[in-house]
Amino acid sequence: MRSPGGRYWITYNGEIYNFRSLRAGLEADGVRFRSDCDTEVLLALYEREGPRMLERINGIFAFGIWDAEAGEMFIARDRLGVKPLYHAEVDGCLYFASEVKALLPALGGVGLRREVLADYLTFLWVPDPDTMFEGVYKLAPGHCATFADGRLTIRQYWDMAYEIEERPEQDWVETVREAVGASVRRQMVSDVPLGSFLSGGIDSSAIVAEMAAVNGPVTTFTVGFSARDLDMEIVPDDVRYARQVGRLLDVDYRERTLEPNVVELLPKLVWHMDEPVADPAAISTYLICSAAREDLTVVLSGMGGDEIFAGYPRHLAARIGRGIDLLPRSLVRSFSELVERRMTLGGPGRLRGPRRNLMKLARGLDAPALERYLTYCSYYRRPELQRLLSDDVPAGDPFRMHRRHLERVRGQHWLNQLLYLDMKTFLPCLNLTYTDKMSMATSAEVRVPLLDDELVALSGRVPPHLKLHHMTRKHVFKRSMEGVLPKDVIYRPKAGFGAPLRSWLVGELAPMVAEVLSPEAVRSRGLFDPNEVQRLIAANREGREDNALRLWSLLTIELWQQAFIDRRDVRMQAGSAPDS
Image 1: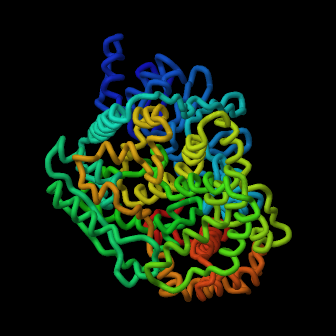
Image 2: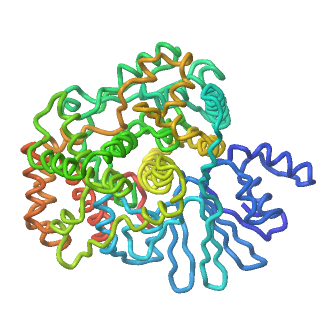
Image 3: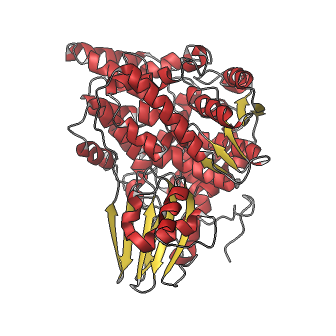
């Protein structure tokens, strides 16, 4: 779209939730609009205020605005990185897009960046601003950039602030309830069919409850997996809770039991993902978005509540670790070594989850508090990486960006330091990345009201002890939903959104693993030690180690190389048109 005078041009992906109030203010100043869309409001706001306009908009976005008179390109990404924005510079020109695939014709052939391979293995994704592609970078969340005279200048326009307000707990409970409701209502504005995911957890259930209170019956989508697949997993089945909430709120409840052809689906989704992101939740997201898109265009998701209100098990593990720090170091080290040496994952059953969590907890107990948390955020320690990587692939320091983020909030409460780190790394680089890519692959739009700008800002003022209260995660958020949702839903065991990876790896994916990760195939790439890869496979198969996500990451990076480095044509299989 271009401005009326022709000076400014915009290309834009996203939604501005307060565009109507912004438009009203611009109209009061004499601006006249030709359409009813937020794109025109963005363009008019930039024409009036320039980059300062970013301080006023509440939404999810990636956009570029060309100033024909100044000869400058301005690009920006939303505060939390809900929408992706990639960029590359070739022969003095800036290329940017929401998908790396759009940049490939300008780049010609692309290569794998060996120096970030250790980052990918450690986290299952590559931290911003890097990518696995040589020459391609991500604009970090909350950042903008100007390209002029052949030079790209990047700056941060927003950062999370923690300014704690000490108020009575009940005041905070009521404030959070009101803020969550307002966020949901803002993001319900749509001129196309709108509904919600419903997992049966507190996040999605709270969103559906507010939608139902505002608009009557809500169309919801729930996915589950077969009992056979779930038998090997470490989380409870969500479906019974989702059914309970669906009955309580009288929703138009849609449920599907997923038994996907993973062997056929995985290469297609690696292509849609662009970046190698090794979380099997991407498959579940793609399938639930595909199901929802049959009836809906816009779907609300409960993502984000864990990052702003401290909902992950690792937040609780960090609290436990701080208590264990009071014990003699020799005792802690002995316990950690005993668990690592003697405990195994074991066979399928109810004890597999507690065993895995205890093994994970023990891995970092003898480290300082922040280093311990980094261990909980990772899948390899340095000696393990060095055993896996080939001699000419650097192990480096995968935590270098994490440490920079932690340094910025060094004076904050320890819990807010961890939440800040999650908000800058885990949230945008993993969860929001696969959510956007998989929803866009199905032509569905996913919105995340728990990451609304105003609610996120509010969370920074909530005292940490109301987020993690004794052993209760998301305490103030859970209390805010009392009277709205049943207590057995509010205080149910947390079940992360994922997929039955462990069942797939010993079942239908086993032949693909054997082929793709064979010693010959691994040796031909020259990235990993073939013997160590085989050891990981054997230890996982025998239940001595839980290497499911490690193997998934190795499988994903090989399929990614086949698609983007070898340029094997999976595009038509994935439903994407070939490059022109």
